[in-house]
Image (tube, rainbow, N blue to C red; front, side, top):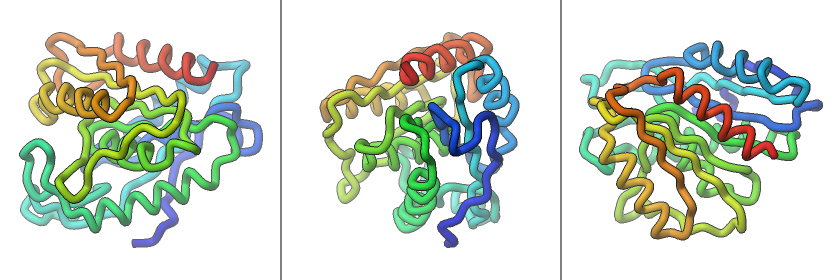
Length: 219
């Protein structure tokens, strides 16, 4: 897999950004999925200089979808929780996202994502705590297995904001609650905000809450 990911860039330039948010889409989508949100946040943050980088995942066969080729950060083998995944594809995307992370110049960089993209944000962010200012998890979950355990906290201040709909049929609330519990056991302070009756999507309240969380991280 080529480590260079194509991406939409919104808001401040790489050279001027005070905060950069690398925001990863969910399975089968692309960077355009959150372009409206990124653009709205960049405008709302003015005169602060916020930058949004929305990469496009590579197209790969996805086992749970009968091997159909689609944009995906990694191959999902089974929808059990924790997800059974092809860790080779996780590692390939991890390297690609780390390349994006290394290219950013802002003093603070947040890794963010929705659903599968949120799981990717956690995977990369927990392994790059010295470079990441925080992790934003929307309708997401934690990737882990016996051979791929959750890394322990090493950074002094490392916010993790989790936002999840109570009625999500794709990523059950229990997956988010389990992720938060595992993170707490590893020394992180993970906050989980639950939205009643919201399914696998963002509601208006969540959009506002995410912006407020980003403001706190930005300082």
